[in-house]
Length: 362
Image (tube, rainbow, N blue to C red):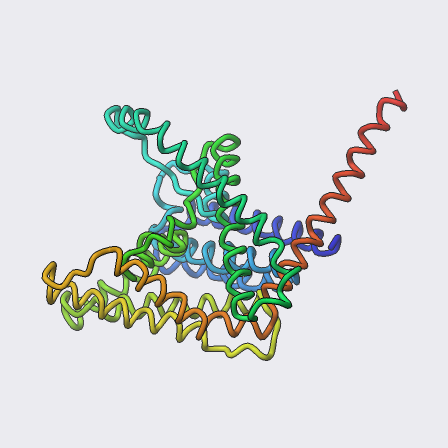
């Protein structure tokens, strides 16, 4: 674990130096092909860096934040688009943070919106604290799953591991969001927006599930594909290649992350991509039905909600989870998390002992 922490520090410094280089290129080289050519070596480097990490958590985080999100932001920045170009006066520190993390630069709110925000703050904060308390309790319960996996069906165990990962990520992002707001004054994008309350596939993928990915796929893939397709097939039919292209890229990037994340020759290489393409087709069908029938063929939310979540879970069980289950990815992640926590606890105790001994030398 100590070697892995050392590798992670080296990767972090490489990313820091690379983003500083990108910032300098943006100041010197005009947008377009010339800037893209200057930034392409960094894109290749960011695809290479996660290979230096071997634990599931660190390699997975590096693959997601660096190989995917940072690379897409850099490619957008080459043409003066995306979050790195949202503010002409963005500082170097903000550039580095926004490039490496899901941070959004907020505009100054108007006095009216600020007043309304202050009026709504207390009840919203109260609900938020209650939800976090429930998720922490759920995390504590799910963390004991490994001790009972012999008595539970393997697919149910995989789902519980997945649920544990979801609760863990949302809780950690909530803590990180508070720390980022206090320490550097920046807002983190929330990763989820209560996806279990989704009432349609469009609601699930567009407004509730993995908002970090949605916010980068929209300007990087969806809008350029739609604009290009509009010139070829017209605006009416441009949604088809735009949606399918977005889901295809999302599937391929998930395959890439799993390549870093899970070293297993038993994993089918296209199951995850098929999962996303299937949902792209179903989402287009849903949109077409809504446009064709409008409100005349609208099922109540009490029906569409369970149908949506049930369809997502069913397709996930058939196409997504089996690939990870064969490689025992969730079990490895749990073991590595326990080892990481033990290592951090041991190092914290060593630091505490060292600080206690300092006064005796004075």
